Amino acid sequence: MILAVVEHESGAPTESSQEMLTLAREVATETDSSLEAVVIGAEGAATTDHLGDHGVGTVHHVDDERLDTYAPEAWAESICQLIETTDPAAVVGPGTDRGQELLAHVGARLDLPMVANCIEVDVDGDQQYELARQRWGGSLVEHAHLDGETKLLTAAAHEFSPRTVDDATDPAVESFEPTLDEEAFRVVVDRIESSDTGGVSLAEARAVVGGGRGVDGADGYDKLERLADHLDGTVGASRAAVNEGWRPHDDQIGQTGTKISPDLYIACGISGAVQHMVGCKGADTTLAINTDPEAAIMQKADYAVVGDLHEIVPELNKMLDETG
Image (cartoon, rainbow, N blue to C red; front, top):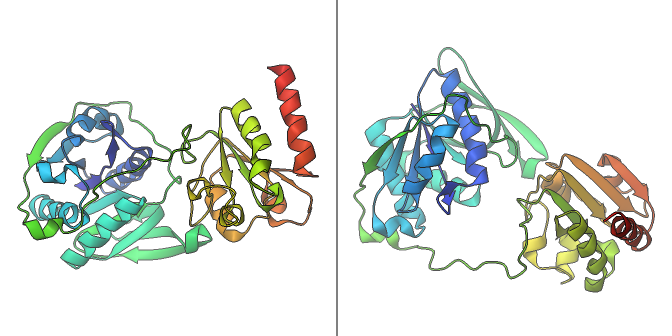
């Protein structure tokens, strides 16, 4: 059996969990195993309705009202106890901060190796796992062998497309009540603060307009905001622009910011440092606007316009205004 750790929001699996389920199902198919899932907290029960579409046959609902709020040690201990009860061949989690943290805790508690940010998993006839995974923020691909009584791995973000199955069924739901002491709740999330910028998030936007040092100041983003509105998208920024205080950290695209995977990414005045390219390499199409034809991003973009963004972007906005 392959066990998928599903994160959820508003009663549905998050996009990163849907991506992960694609990988988990591939591993289950290669190993001729069933695919099961674990959800934690009261809200997780509602997620069950969506998981049958991803090939999940059984959902284990970890039921303890104290787990409704994220507590890394308690959540990890719950998964450890479920592993000891169900004995899965592998546990697959999403490549999010929470997914990585949870399986790292599980690995430490059960003395099992963990491989993070996998982009490919091959299983041979002896059930040996050969993996490819991202290292150094995605700038390096490492090929590794994973051994262990239970394999622990996470799916790299934006590397797998969420895919549903043709023969979806209603998964069976099994309640699981872990035994947890109060010490496991030493660290809990006491609140979640939403960004005050509103609009579509960078991670989910289908169009992103990014601005870097070439924008020349916070006011320079007004024209980028207009362009993003025309495209029903959102605005992002390079680390240099964030460091200057022109945009909040929530807008940062890159290794230490948000990784994006839009249909279209328009990079304005961005040189294309490695850390930034790690964050935007998931874009289907990249258009770069820069005065320097030798800038790294100009070499890697699908389309490049050599010129001043302060002249080009207003012209784009004017054209889009006229076309409606």
